[in-house]
Picture 1 (tube, rainbow, N blue to C red):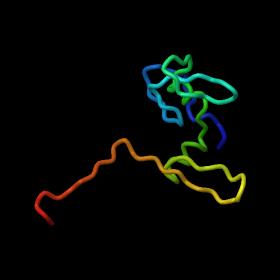
Picture 2 (cartoon, rainbow, N blue to C red):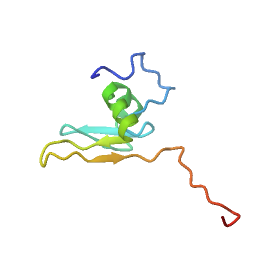
Picture 3 (cartoon, one colour):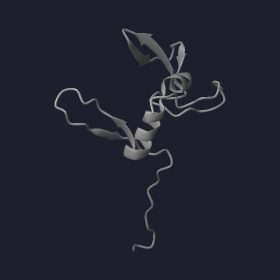
Length: 94
């Protein structure tokens, strides 16, 4: 389950799901990636390289990210809004 999510070679023309925004650039400093317009790391590449199957399963089952269990022992789920979500309203008043 902790295997790589993407087993094919990296393709810049493919959008990869992950925790980084695919069309943003990132800078690495002090063991953390920061979003930076002048960064050298491509978010899409970081998604390809860092995603694990367990992360994809977490997205399917819980809808997104989950906080660490360090501390109080309770895990909180952090949902992500779907890119295809739309609000539908009735124009007939019903």
